[in-house]
Image (cartoon, rainbow, N blue to C red):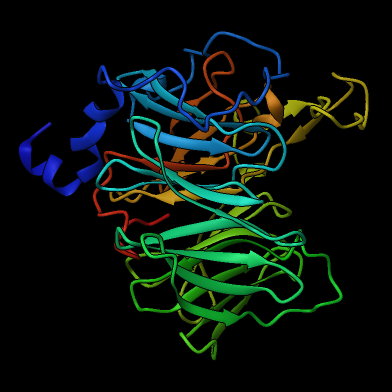
Length: 352
């Protein structure tokens, strides 16, 4: 890769930190999260795109509490966060530190597995989304009786911004929000999971625009100003322009079965809806990333062992990469492609 590419992709320049002699097998606060319960299998090498060798990436998946970093086609670093709760959002910063949400707490760890920041929520509160704002601050959406957007200074502990988020308080705390993003335009984009809408607010939480969607798990503002929504009920990703029109979308039903369908499988810890193998059902996505080349990478829980975790699709809906590897990886909820340009801690530079 050229030197200019490295300059535009700062995370590539710090990958060496994760494989140094000072990186311990287990960090001081690292806690074993249990053996995965999905069926282990070799990577499906018949799928397009080169498997784990296509990109360097870091990702997390709801249902498996281990952070996984991949480079040169192999897992080079993991961080185990223990049992309970769920991992939903992940960021590698330009200095190599890894910032993540863990439902009941959020944290940042260095490549040598030292915890550099930790924030635990009081009982009755939780968070499924965060975002770096510079190297010193972090934005969190807090699901609570009084839900709010909060920006903290990680170094001083000071709350530099806090605002209540409008919400129907009769609905459960857990399903309030799954994703918040501060945009390049200094606005907030909030995905209302249960209320079925994505809303853009200014910094005083005055309404800018509202987009109806059945159950939006995530939404991000693209560099072109459009909003990209992943809806887990609709099994769809859709790009919405300023007029509220859908200018691009992809639905599970449009893609070949091998990428989006799996036999019904018992989710770990839950009773099965039916005996495995009795029927096939579509697999949806929770979040996605718009790459600089215009392609979109979709993240899936993959029915915990039976479908691909990642799909990369062009604007023409051609699948150019699909990764199904339940031997080395787990379910996927959020991914950061480290070879895509943009400084992660600059809001809006990374389309994720």
